[in-house]
Image (cartoon, rainbow, N blue to C red; front, side, top):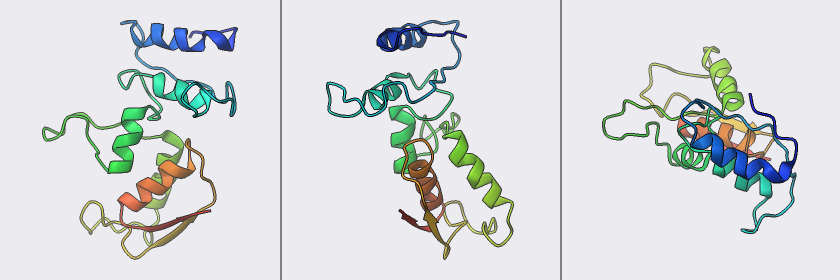
Length: 147
C-alpha cells in the first residue's frame, strides 16, 4: 500500500507504480483535485485516471478500458479473445444484480441483446458509475436515458 502525502506528487507516484514490476494493481481514491483543470483542459483527476496503465488498472477506469467499454470491445486481444477488459466495479455490480432479475435479463438472447426492449433511466452521469453503467446496459441492448 502506497500513501502519497502531497497531491502534487500523485502523477510521479502513479508513473512509478505503473513501471514497478512488484505492483499488480492500482486504485486511486478520487477526488484528489476535484474539478481543478489540467493542462489539457480536462480535470486534473481525469488526467490522473488516464495516467494509470491498463496493466495495473483494477478499477477499469483508465483510458484504454473506458474506450473499449464505449466501443463494446470486450477483450484486449481481439480476435484471440483471451484477455477480458476490466469493467468499473460499481457499474458492473448493478449489471450483475439486474442479471439476477428474471424479467430484466434474457439470457436466451444472443450476447448484446439480453436487454432488448427494455428502457432504462440512469440518474447519474459520473465517469465512475453513471456513464459506464449506461454503456454496459446499452451494450446489452437496452434503450438508455441518462439524466
